[in-house]
Amino acid sequence: MINMQELELLRDALAKLDEGSAALPKFAPSLDTEGAADVLAEVATRMQDNFPYYHPQYAGQMLKPPHPVARLAYALSLWVNPNNHALDGGRASSAMEKECIVDLGRVFGWEEPLGHLTGGGTMANLEALWVSGCLEPDKKVVASEQAHYTHSRISEVLRIPFAGVAVDDLGRMDITALQELLDTGEVGTVVVTIGNTGLGAVDPLPEVLALRDRYDFRIHADAAYGGYFGLAGNLDDGTKDVFARLHEVDSIVIDPHKHGLQPYGCGCVLFRDPSVGTLYKHDSPYTYFSSGDMHLGEITLECSRPGASAVALWATHRLLPPVPGGEFADGLNACLGAARQLWHELHKSSTFTPLMQPELDIVVYAVNADTSGKASQRAREVFDAAAERELHLALVELPTEVVQNYAPNIVADSELTTCLRSVLMKPEHEEWVERITALLEASAR
Image (cartoon, rainbow, N blue to C red):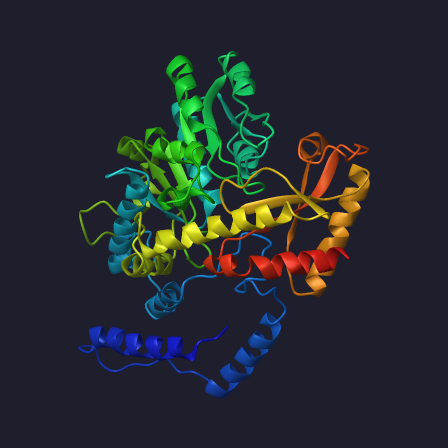
């Protein structure tokens, strides 16, 4: 887990950073090294109480280890501790953040989007829906029933009416159900989820865009989880069509702390039309400026934000540019390949029934049983038994009628069925599918 070479790299980089302060009189804050050593040893002991998120046998929630260069750049920046709210607080890191926004905009085909980093997808989605509420006042926000719960919660915070849209058998937004809501004339914004976190399903954006031509509403793409997969080279044709048209939406959220190899928290919100920046206008009697250039605090709802996040993301982009065909994209291909491989392996099992074919890198599967209640109980038992073998999974509850589409022999005696869910978001997972499958079968026995 720990590579001591990383500490050597950090030491050398800190020496380079210190050269920038050579003109200042020598000064070093005092430190009780003995006391600090005791405290850090205690911290290390306490932190042992964690799941092994970095290891390929952790295939539970969306927890992807940051790249070493991101981890090191983040730590390096903490010796400065920049604040990207205003240029005075983080000159270098603010410039780095703006460069990262250009990089992320190009992932979606936007050359000059308005945008900034956030503490995560929740805050990024809040800003996008806040802008939608300003531009479409008193109109509903709608998102699929498999969309992240943050959208309904944010809408409540913003006092914007919200409605859920039914999903089809693949976990995608049902277009007929969406059209029925649009017929009411009450919808101002449709949230399309580019990879929902439960199933990895991608909403049918081309069909939603066709409806926008008829009904005139804003489209917000929640690509917090799946956004980077537009760089992958092995998407299926339907999913590829969705990513090819993402540049037509009004706003996009992506989380570099998911597939972007970043530490928590690093989200991002992007707007196609830079003029929405005027909605952020504020007058502060004390905001400090050392430059006439626009600073990031003028286009964010958050004030103080860690410049360390921008430094870490910038360093990662320099080492692994987010472009098609590069090393970063190859990692996404491997994640997608691992999910498809596990899905195919589960078809050979007499114990498990895989559900919808993965569009991204999430695999969902039921445990075979006579009834939905027994299938749920067995899923929880396998979950516990797998954890004892250091295979860490996740659970997801789905409508039983959806599960029956793939496991018709399960008799419904409950509205919901608990299934197992594996997120294979480490490129190394591709080499561990055989072992993961064997551990699953052993856990079921």
